[in-house]
Image (cartoon, rainbow, N blue to C red; front, side, top):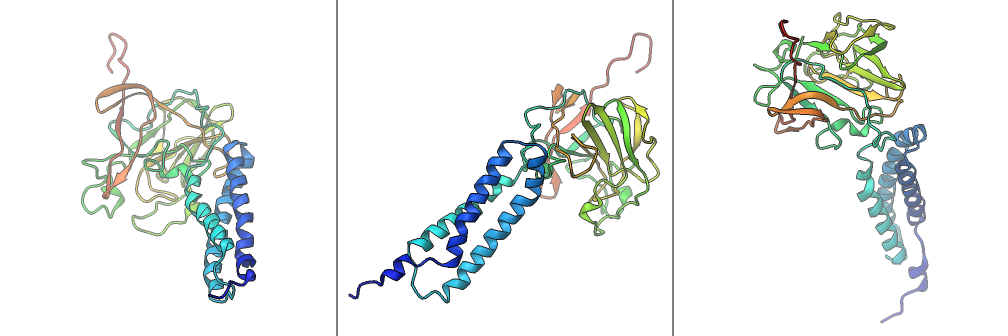
Length: 315
C-alpha cells in the first residue's frame, strides 16, 4: 500500500488553529468568574458566555464547511481540534447560574412574605430547576410569587387578568427601609401579548433595606403604588397591588435583592423569608423553592405566620 504523504499528518486546518484560543478564553473566563470579583465578573458574565457560544458555533460550522475543501485527509490535529471544541460546547452549561460574590454572604435582614395568605413560589431557590432567574446577575436570588389552586394560578380560561388569583392582592413591604425608587406609570401587559425583555419590572418599588442592599418589588398594578422616593416604610406596610406590568407573563410579584440601585447592573444577594409555614410546618428562616412542570406550578406553598396579638387585643 502507498505510504501516506507526511503533509497529511502535519497540515493544520484554519479552524483547528483557533480552537486553542477559544479553549484558553473559556478556561480564563471560568477562572475569573469563580474568583467572584464583583463588578468585573458581572461585565464578563454579560459578554463572555455569549461570545464563547458564538465562537464555538462559528468553528463548528467552519469545520464542516472546511471538510469539503480539505485535501490532506483527517489527521491528529482535526481529532484534537474536535476534542477541544466538544469540550467547550459541553461545558457551556457551567454558565447556567451567575456566581455572585454574595453567594456565601446572604443578607442578615429579616424579610417577611409580601403577600398574606397561602403563597405559591413560582420561581425561587438556588438552582435553575427551581428558579429560572439564576442566569441574571442582579436577579440571581430572585423570587416570583403568586397564588394557586391545585397547581393552577387562574380560573376559567386565564385569558383575562381578573382570572388570576393573585391579581389585585395587596403587596406589603417585606422589610423596613427607605424608598429609593417608585414607578407607577406602566400599563398592564395583557395575557398572551408580546412583551419586551428589557421592559423589566414595570411598576415597581425599590427599598434600601440595609447599607448597599436594595430590594426591588416589581410587576405592580398601575395606579396602585402608595409610596414615593424618600419615604420610610415599615415591614408589612402596603406598597401597591399585584399586577402584570413590565416583562410579566401573568400577574405575580417579583422580588430580588442586589448591591446596586441600577437594575441589571448589580449583583444578586441571597435573602431568606422568616416566620412562615410550609406544608403546615413552621419555618423560622428559609428560602422556599419554586418549580413548574406540565403547565402547573409545583413550587412550595408558604404562608406567613401571624404573630399572636397582645393579651386583650384582637389579632
